[in-house]
Image 1: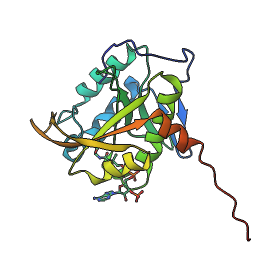
Image 2: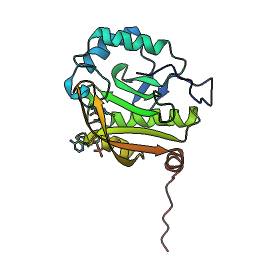
Image 3: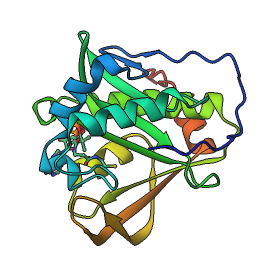
Length: 198
Ligand SMILES: CC(C)(COP(=O)(O)OP(=O)(O)OC[C@H]1O[C@@H](n2cnc3c(N)ncnc32)[C@H](O)[C@@H]1OP(=O)(O)O)[C@@H](O)C(=O)NCCC(=O)NCCS
């Protein structure tokens, strides 16, 4: 998923396990390949992610985990709920000046707010660990769930592009989004106001 590109890192001693209210995000290992393959091997996931092959075999998962193990930057996380892997979230640095947030969840875990929770943790990690001003992402125009996740995380729509999707073996329109460091930092510091009766 990620190329071995030098990224502008702020903190070399960063943690590689992220905890949220319900989830743990950690580096995937070879012990996870069976579960990753079982979760990822679903056309409904492949048709909405640019590079996930379909069918997705355990060998695909082994290649993926091995490629992650050789990377210095851990920007791809396995998402776990109650010690069970449920999906993946990560930052793709293939275009060094336009890092891209991507994620998918096993279908049985959709509709419970997990993607938003995991994406928020990965976004915090990104802006806290890397010296970048913008994070990008995209959702097929026919993927309202993913668009909602991005909007709930503060991403702003910047246009539509055609992108090739491995599983579709063709290109399809994608809504493109961008989150700036300024918007992220404003959302993070937005505390509740106090209402007083006048
Ligand atoms: C996109 C995906 C990650 C969403 O996961 P999820 O955990 O269900 O997402 P969340 O529950 O955090 O948020 C989804 C939001 O979209 C809404 N939603 C779901 N399906 C929808 C639909 N068909 N139309 C409109 N809104 C929809 C949900 O109600 C929720 O919004 P809410 O919190 O305001 O109610 C999951 O569907 C998935 O893995 N899809 C396949 C891969 C993919 O699309 N990856 C993203 C590519 S970048």
